[in-house]
Length: 229
Image (cartoon, rainbow, N blue to C red; front, top):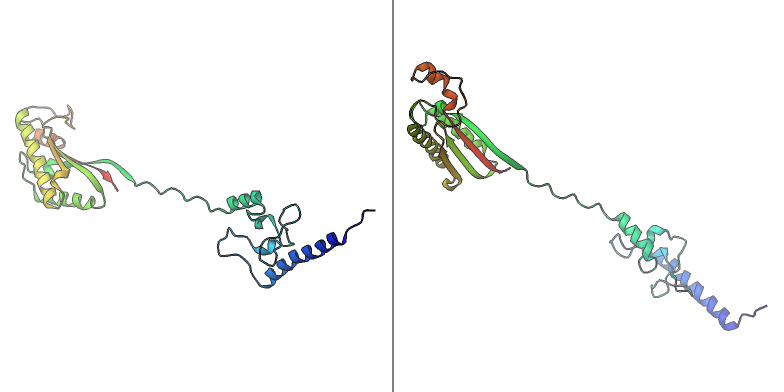
């Protein structure tokens, strides 16, 4: 039978009570956590000595008390368990902020007859009201460019219709600018009798009332707005 020396017995009697006395004192003092950081585990999970340092056994391992659970692991003693606990407790990553809603270029078509009298480029009262409503509608849009394109019907020469369509587009721009839109953001163009909406549905060449009425959809101003909400 192996004899245990008095020296070894004395060490065993002193070390073990010291480790447990620290844990009991820490719990009795009501120390529930090192600070408010959730990542810091409760001290009663580990035995501590009189200096408040976590006690270790002869193999260097931290001394677990009866309160210890894997969720209470600290990096100094149980690094693998602590890392898993921190990952599990980490809040879900915030969803990326929604990108600003981008509006596709919006094209609005105004009947030239609603904006102008036939063969004229001066805005009518109804045309002014329609453009005012348009300006109000784009107040919530951060627009980059507004394009006003005028068109004419096929009555008259190509050159005349081209100039008439440009004058109509310029009248629209002038009114938009008068309502506070920056001139540099408004581009105008005139397409004359190009791209007729009526196609070949209107018969005749003479300037009759019937032909003028039939070609009304071709006399128009298209306004295109590109920007973001």
